Image 1 (cartoon, rainbow, N blue to C red):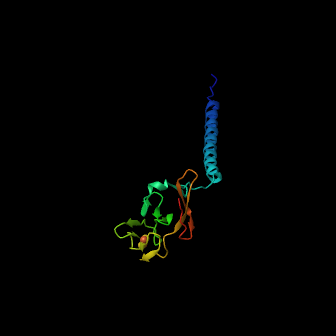
Image 2: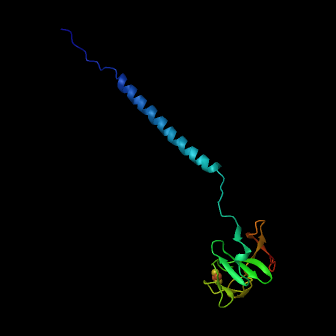
Length: 163
Ligand code: FES
């Protein structure tokens, strides 16, 4: 009786599955690497821009500021002052360490709550550790009749806007 030989069958199906698995694994890895590269390339090529609010502030109609008034705009960090000489605007941020100052109508001064610097309403320093007066900002009346203030443009003091 002839002896039956049991030779192992070629594992074509298993080999194909293993090869297919490694091909898919490789393609998956390449896809992840490509996606990561695309993300970093997009971040690298995107402009590195800070979107800050405009330094130009629309302070509204001059009529809304009574004569001899000092009005703090907390959002923009400026005072709009209506003096008998005209309108002007000074920064409300203390020149010492950057605290927001406050108008004290009972004393007629601008005071810093942090370390006690005091300023006249025209920004002149009275006392305290602040090294400089409060800056004057360029102020004008727009074509629509609104008071405009450019916080990025400090100017020489005593430049009043007459309306
Ligand atoms: S921050 Fe105003 S006095 Fe120091």
